[in-house]
Image 1 (cartoon, rainbow, N blue to C red):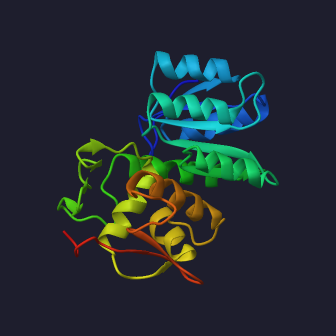
Image 2 (image 1 turned 90 degrees about the vertical axis):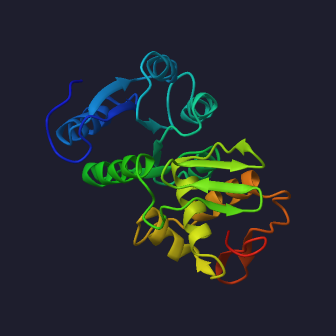
Length: 242
């Protein structure tokens, strides 16, 4: 597939992984029209080889693949590059796979059957966030005890060790750090961080769980990202905003 001049995601390298030739053709054509440089892989093995040969800016990944399935491809891609944006294509009724995909680090998902225009908009959103300052971020470095986050450089460290965060995990952490003390519902976070007016709120639940595993001393008894029963979540600084 070749690139086509357009607006939106101009110049970004996108790897599309899908064994359905009709779906793959539609996805590739719409992305090319949006200015992306698109490569196509029909199997998990091809996807991993293509990503190793020329690292993409984003991967569109079908979960149902011959050979190595999409979840295993996602796991291996994440092992190579924790920050690589990945958007899943999932069957409409496969909620367990969808949640598992999010738990393994997918940044977003689009359920089949899907609108190609919606997919392009989701991809634009993820690409924009992967290379830009989150909307809620300030120019200042944020700190909370041993947790230090630089929104402009998109770097996070805990106790002087780098944190491997996905695009959405980083955005969620920055939003919570810049809006501490308030209880945010899952719908609020879906709107503020993902930019979705509606959607599967389990997306937020999974990302909060993953984020706790990375920033909490004991994820089962979180001190930073607190659960507010019946509402959602609240960020508590260890000693006040730093």
